[in-house]
Length: 225
Image (cartoon, rainbow, N blue to C red; front, side):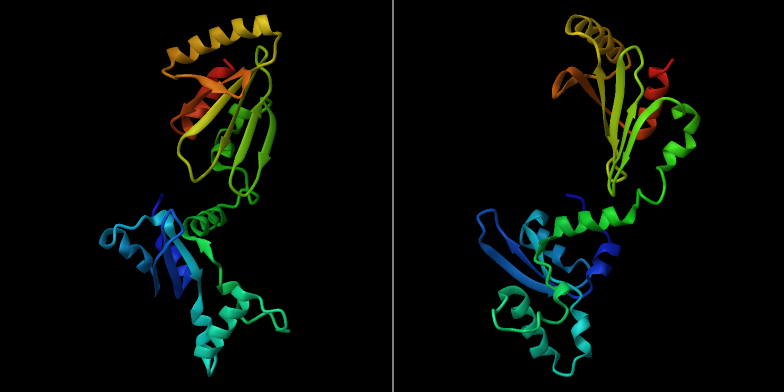
């Protein structure tokens, strides 16, 4: 698991954390800020995957005169959901009860907004893609690209800004006999470029792992030569 950044921990503020082992046994509970929760990875041999954040941004409660009891009351309302409390509790959003890895993944996704713009690599290589892309799908974490057909072959990939390697898939749209012949030639061509192919769900699909998005663009350009 990637170590969370300082910016991420700054977002957590004052927090409470716990470590639970693979069998669900509670090992340790602590409080802190910054990367305090990670200090036990060496001293206690804990795994970062077993760390959860119980509550975050608890500095919000400091403005209250009786903040100690106010904090405990809010925590119990948020976690126990008593039937007859008419108020849901103050700062309910502080009690997240989420794994550290999930919170960090959400944080990373927020840092790159695919809706704001197309990926820079697409803009910089627009002439390579122009007239050759059949479909683009964008969400908060990935960009999907599907080419037009080239000799009955489609090239497609998902790209994430948080991952270096890219899986590229080729799908052949022919009857089975011709598809197998085309596939054999395609596998040979990819092997000559140093790529090892593997199945990708359907008989008509083969995939490769490409080192980075720039190599994908180069491969896309070769695909259209």
